[in-house]
Each structure stands twice: as C-alpha cells, then as structure tokens.
Image (cartoon, rainbow, N blue to C red; front, side, top):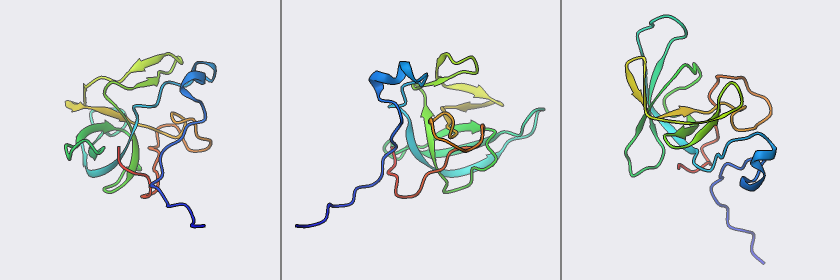
Length: 138
C-alpha cells in the first residue's frame, strides 16, 4: 500500500455554501490565493497610507491591482484576495459585491482578505491574511 500523493493545499472554510446564511458568512468560493508581485506606496492624502499591489491570482499571467492599507504586505507574500465579482460582509454585516473602483486615484480590482473575513480565529482586522507557499494560486 502506497501513501497518498500530496496535493497543493487549498483554502477551506468553516461553513459550507449551503450553510453560510446560518453562520453569517459571505460566499467565499470566488476568493483567490495570490502572490504579490510588487508593492508601491501611494502619496498619503490623509488617513492611513495606501499601497498599490500587483497580484498574480493565477489568471493566465495577468496580474490584478489591489489598493490596500494593509501594512504587512510585501513582495512575494502569498495572500487571499476577494476579486471583482466576489462578496464580502460590510461593517453592518450585509453582503457587498466587490467592484472595480478607484481608491486613492488607482483602479483597484479586488480586496485583500484579513483572517476575520475568512472566518479564521486570531489575526487582526485590516492585516492581510498570508498563507504558506504550499497553497496553490487561484
């Protein structure tokens, strides 16, 4: 008998799609694991500093741009992205669709997820959730 073949890790969530309305979680099936290709600091215009990140989410080598306030993001960080068309919970707990929008004068094509958005224990609000390199892109 041979041991099972290892597979790249995938993100799993505490709530199934059919049960998500009972655990107050959005449908995260559209979220993607991405690798940060570059991070550019944007000129501060009041509030928290903004950073424009070029992120490969496995879509045929076409990176997306995500503007964030998460200070922990670095080149080669493996992070979780809610891309355009996916949903997140807003501050009032209502589902909100992610749309391509201008943030700090740069078009942002998604949102970096923090651990709370993913339903994980621990982690801080506004700190991008990072995952090991064993998590496959996309």
